Image (cartoon, rainbow, N blue to C red; front, side, top):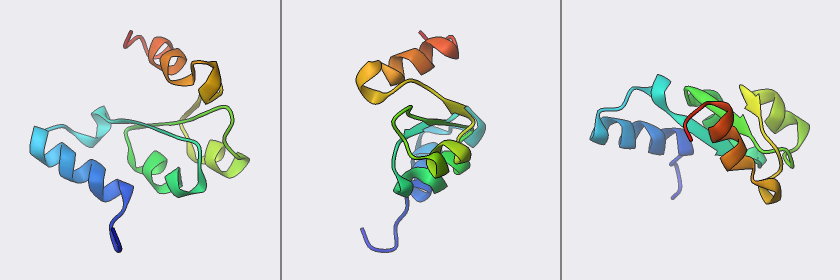
Length: 79
């Protein structure tokens, strides 16, 4: 929606579920994800992302078509 951001969405969900921002992990691969990656406790760029997206992330995982999300979750020992 106009005037809304992914960062705002993270904050609203966090307030609703009483989650600290430091506990949030966000995944992105597009320029519109840069703010969200910087805002989350851990920002993860997909391997297929452009360099500006990767530079905004805390971690870079494999490409989305190469199990990128699952690989990142394994890296952080979530699964």
